[in-house]
Image (cartoon, rainbow, N blue to C red; front, side):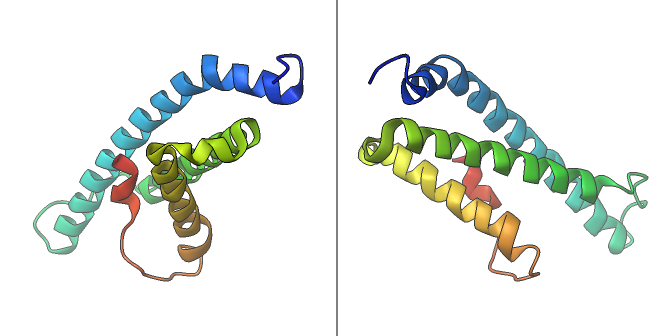
Length: 128
């Protein structure tokens, strides 16, 4: 691939910068998931009368915004990988797993949650 072509520049960008960006996003997403679970546990305790109601009234909106942001970042990464490496991207089992996680998470965030469907929690799979 010619390094001066658009595809070549995307490959260079993916190999030099994007992996660090994605690694940071995975770490930040993991931390956000843990904080979200802690908050949800506190909300559950408050609803049972076991704890005081938290003062963080906008937490649900903030966690949803983080979930949308991380999902968009991971979708952009997948699209760039597919543009750069085409079908060779699926040569690695890890890439197949990663793309399935991104697709299922995108369906959960952008389709199922707005439709208020409940099919279980696939958010834990993102930790893999």
